[in-house]
Image (cartoon, rainbow, N blue to C red):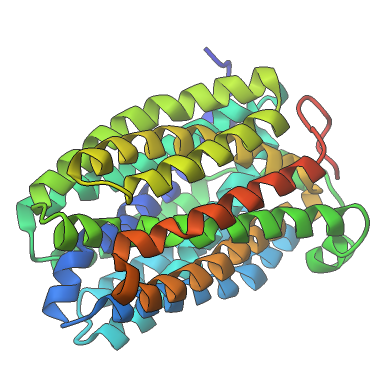
Length: 391
């Protein structure tokens, strides 16, 4: 059991609450996408366009993350919760797909902000030899938020708007997060003298950022379309019911939860580099496999996909945090998320255009080759386990 002092426990509670709310509100679109497409008369190409617009929202998180590196973590986490709670509440009132895309663009911006700043805060405040486990705990908290959506949606389906309207309750969490979440001690000990973006353009941070961003973009040519459209694939191609889809997500979530902890334990003992490369390659392979067969293969592939992707999450969370200085850590996390968006847009647009000729599953599978190529770039990054955090 990891020993935490009172300040670390309070940080876990209030930053964890922000991530929990982000997990709940961010998961609605994925689970309710078949119903959204049906109600708003959206084609696969339309949904791919919606996903591409949402990726653009990541751009807005970068200047906000720069503020977190200059003025602290606490305020920006609270502001992020307020932002995505309002945007998601209004999403429940959206009369068209275009209006939904516009509102969700802002929601994604604030969700990425919270994820980026909370990750930086956890890396900085966790015991050095337990950063992987700390990031696994953070990921599990987000999964718990998503689990609420998984459980609730079959009870209200196809009324997806109700879940978004309920997201407005996240505003109640903003005051306690603002006043009770402690500011990070590691950030407070660092003197900020220049822009975080300017810091990241210096050696060796520039090279690390470019390599990590390139890998992330290539990986998400596969993972973003697969993650956004798998409920559409299950519903329209495999003809699964919302209940069956939720059962799959629950089982994948349970196995993934165990894998989060296993990945955190693994990386704290074996390092970042080797586990990250192995898990990324296997994740790309099993994700592609999920769309290459029928219902049984899709079910099994999704379970394996959840296991390996979940195990990789704390590995990358700890590694990316240790690769960059405290003066620019939140900005680096947000910039990496921008790479996720770029790769996701490319993947979604490709799937939207290829689906009519090779099928939705076949179009997603093609991204697997690109994803594996991206994983090989990780050989260019250094091992960072047990090294002091750069200032």
